[in-house]
Amino acid sequence: MAKKDSSIEKISDVLSLSLKRLDLTTRLDDYGVWPVWNDVVGKTIAKNAQPEKIRHGTLFVKVTSPVWMQQLQFMKEMIAEKLNQRLKGEVVKTIFFMVGRIDAPANETAEAPLSQANEPPRPVNQEFLQSIDDPEVREAFSKLLKSFARRKPKD
Image (tube, rainbow, N blue to C red; front, side, top):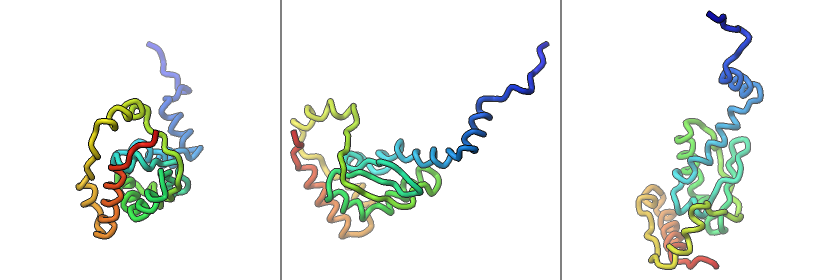
């Protein structure tokens, strides 16, 4: 029977030790925002706001327009709270919005022209609106979403 060589280490032990030495575990936790972003904020916001980077607890998010930036300012605490709940820790301390170009996911770009041509305006997600506590903010966001749903896409 062969003897176990004590100098051989498990790859998981080596990786774990390397992550601790390089202090990459917190960085990996930070980047957990990307996989959960679309689920947390919903389709409408995800099409108009995407995380760009995260540094020292500040999540930098690109938005499609100043209007979206303004509206999301009212919701940033709620978004950060929901992200942290999903990530099971205080990863996002604050959110900073900036206007920039949002790239549509590859699976949506091919389908978009066909579906938008024949579809009526999308209904506003009432469940999402009801999650906003402040009635003025809820009303403003409702108007924004209705306006956005009627908007024709740029060619």
